[in-house]
Image (cartoon, rainbow, N blue to C red; front, side, top):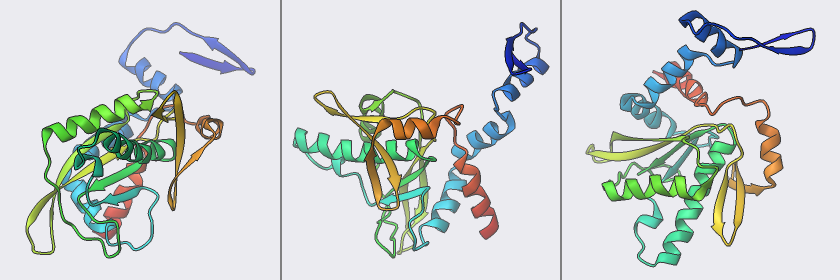
Length: 226
């Protein structure tokens, strides 16, 4: 545990009791009750169903949300085209991680008015997506969660959509393009924008841990409109 006094940092050895663990977390600016709430919401499909139903009808671009009818690289055979489309999508994920985090919902059109169409989810596709995030993003952080949800389409039929829940990363995330090229995207109102990695690192200086803090913002909006 560290202790700051008179502008100096002192390292202290402390017994590993439950109370001292709490002090360590506080010293690291980690609110364990908040983390537990975030974990609960991440794994709660009912919460994401409520949130998606609410936010899909908003007409303005939301910094925490993006919608896609499907993932293009799931539907192409040509390996080069598949890789290109996969990189384009992984850049969207990295861009959320490099800003404040957010959610990409697969199975809802992005044009206004958005329509719930659903997708056919295959285990191979999910594995391909998970491996793509780990393989193409540098450094390889565990900063995404995938949550299937059930929604009603325009015909009042139950369809499955996919929420990709993306944490705000503590490090600058780059996407590998091959030949040693790595691009560092940020999320903007128009989509993503490649920037110098130092721009992102400067923004990360105050972020002590990879976090899902944005979920609390979404929860407040859902609660307000329930």
